Amino acid sequence: VEHILNDDIFIYGSLSEGFKSGGINFSDGKAFEPEHVLSYEFGAKTSWLDRALTLNSAIFYYDYKDLQVSAFEGSINSSPRVRILNAAEASINGLEVELSFVPNATWDVSGSLTYLDTEYDKFITGRSSAGAVVTEVDASGNQLNHSPELSTHIAFGFHHPLAQGTVNYLLSAYWQDKEYFTAFNDDITSHDSYTLVDMRIAYEHHNGAFEVALFGHNLTGEEYSNTSQDFALTGVTLN
Image 1 (cartoon, rainbow, N blue to C red):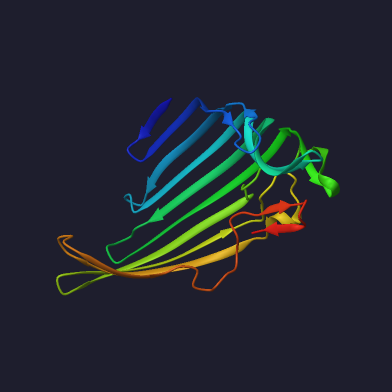
Image 2 (tube, rainbow, N blue to C red):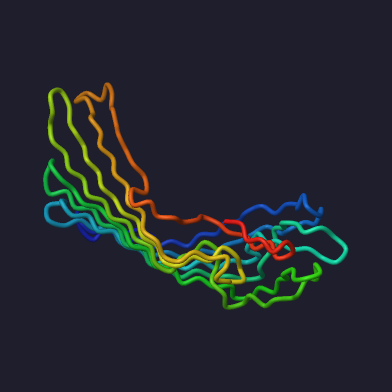
């Protein structure tokens, strides 16, 4: 559903359903079920100050059935292995805000903020412990994998003409809250909040014939990981 209030304000709402195909785990030959999600979203796209300022926002809710989750486990009669399991139910409530301010051709600012409230509503799983015994664990109420509660991004751009082209400077920063990498929400398989700072300087020919750029990622040398797995049977945590 969409509605244009005026030239500067557009609101919308949507209801959609999606799925991810099931499959078979190569580690043990056992099948996992398709994942289904029902999503609700309501948002607005707005512009202000003669369209120099753009502000977009959205709230959303995702209702998952048979969410596919990767897990490491073993048993007394089998080798440790990574399997894809199905969580019975999970949900995500969220808010996203995006902003862009371009007052002139010389500089601009953009940014975004995302809030997520995620939860395994119902998920009985197993984890391996000493002796390769799989212990039943109720992960219901835990936060979903790879779902930091808060994350934000901001970027500053500066542009000026030079010879037959334009020099563009872009300085950006990204911050995110603590993130868990498994359904157990253990500190050993998580990462505390961190910040990344990037910069890019480019010269672009006025007709787009070529561009030369110099860029740097993670200029502050922040140490961080994108994933972690607790290989409980071996006593090793891999980041």
